Image (tube, rainbow, N blue to C red):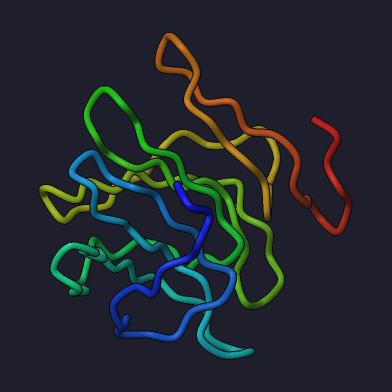
Length: 141
């Protein structure tokens, strides 16, 4: 890789505090975020960099900004983790997005709410979630 950034296709919504995951087929799923001071997004978009297109992805049950996401290697679904609502509530919920079926379903509950955390899939189908902010405190676990 050259380290140079590349422009992506135009999205349906302007987004900040969103997250993105590369899918098994090379497309990119852009998740949530916000498009104004008062509007968190429930929407996702699938960016096809080869074709230069953007299309709607699964809609989440909860609008999230500052969430984390990780690709689940076994089935290609995406686990969306925590985040926050526009009212300042930090979320302890997760959602599983299935791009092939265009569906969202509830995932496991986190031990504590987390906003701006990081996550990675570990061996044995476990997810390590670290850091972030919970109730205005930076998390050390």
